[in-house]
Image (cartoon, rainbow, N blue to C red; front, side, top):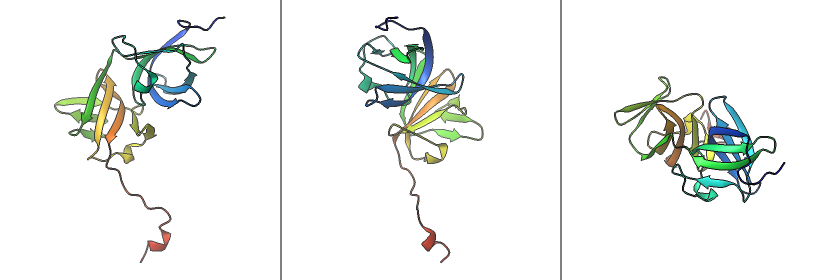
Length: 169
């Protein structure tokens, strides 16, 4: 079977979780089935924005919600398009995240967060506890659900390691 451009047998909407340029692979997370998988890419892989305009791989980043086509048997990515259904709230400084109510307020709008909402900082996946209320965040979602949060400017925390000698006086 030929595996040139336009050859695919599967399609998906997923979140980009890792781009490995050395291995020429991209890892995706499908929130519908809560599953991660990795696909290889090559010179025939096509990238585009949600309007169909060409993009380069360098313009794709962790946290992007994308529509992809791929050849499952070869685990080869055919096309990657920024999802037309995705909305983006870029570089937000005023927001309220309530993990007990599972929602985020951005202005007067309230969005759902789930166990599948992924958080990224400097291209790496992080945990909720790594967020700081002073961080500048970008939110990506579909309909009323936030699927990814990207720390655009973090304020972080200082964590001490090997501090046993200083504890207790």
